[in-house]
Length: 348
Ligand SMILES: [Zn+2]
Image 1 (cartoon, rainbow, N blue to C red):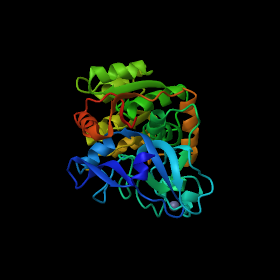
Image 2 (cartoon, rainbow, N blue to C red):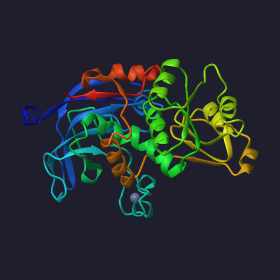
Image 3 (spheres, rainbow, N blue to C red):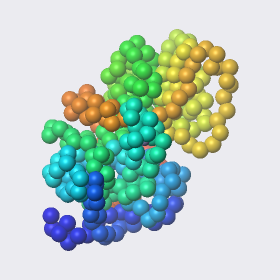
Image 4 (cartoon, protein in one colour):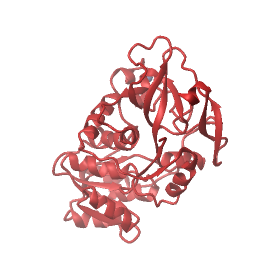
């Protein structure tokens, strides 16, 4: 508690779009009404954050402490907070939604009509020793779940869960094509699709990443640097195509390939999107294919995924750990597209 007593904390600050993160010492925030303060124990580092740093990601108010995959311990609560108390171990749901609109009322909170934004974009996030948020954003985790597993669960596992369960409705016997399968979200998408009984075809750009995909359950792999994704997907399914394609890269060329790889009545889900138009032949939809997008995951799904991970049914894949002050090193590895799975900040 010594640093909290001093009322200041270590943080990594992003001052402007396209900048580098800067080491700083800032005031520890004080929780107001209906807010709580978390001592951060682990924070995930992924592609969205690399995009924010490169000014190609979500809109951010500067200066900002970024970081939205967060787990730790509640150390203080503001007035009006009855259901959280000091010492509670929690992870963070990173959407700041209203809880009053139609979408919040029917369990599709990430479609909130009054969304204020995300943790780490419009309010400070987890690349600091403490983070203050509305109490609703903190979700308790079971004692057997480690902080790093919880942090990664908060996006890199919850997001592909929503993709496979609620957007693509994956069933046993489906062939599922995962594009960007060796990355931080993709490697968990491979595991989730397997858990739902599918046969998984993993797509990525290096043999090292594809070996990781096989290690975590992929049945087939396609190196998109050397092979055409759609042709290979059709070859591997005897010309049928895949019932589901989840595209975690979201470039015009991957989306085009993923849609072309679909079977009759197949579903294509885009997750991360690179800005720009992407043309495709609309007549493909006459076989009743579905093209849809994905927005994070609901609170209900997050509670499911916490149990799934705690039981070991999906394993968090973290291959790089850095101290808070060295997070730039992890972001650089992600920008170079050489990171296998996820990176995380360890605060120990
Ligand atoms: Zn709402």
